[in-house]
Length: 118
Image 1: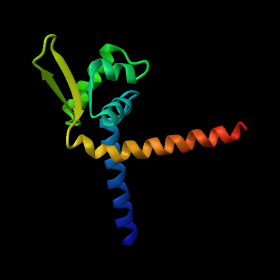
Image 2 (image 1 turned 120 degrees about the vertical axis):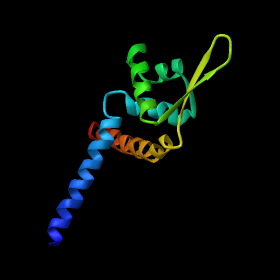
Image 3 (image 1 turned 180 degrees about the horizontal axis):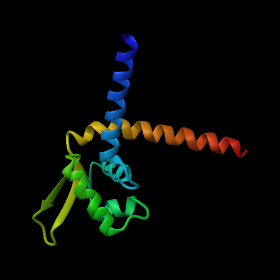
Image 4 (image 1 turned 60 degrees about the vertical axis):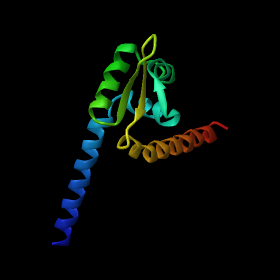
């Protein structure tokens, strides 16, 4: 019986990972979230500069999806010209630890390969 409970728990966790990947998957979303995460508030052009290779159209699409999933907030400022900035929502801030962990892993991963080429 304990084995069935273990299998059920693993299926639940796999489903949760699947759900998370549905929201965060793709080539750009983690990079966009990271740009905003490390800078608190970002303008569209700032994010465009941070995320190498993304087009205006794709950035716009991805920002809308992140906003729909309540991870980022879009604020339009009443300035001339109109200025827009993006920031993480309180819910989106729950990803900060994940972003930090990914960055730490990425540093270690680069180091592992760097050591291989010495």
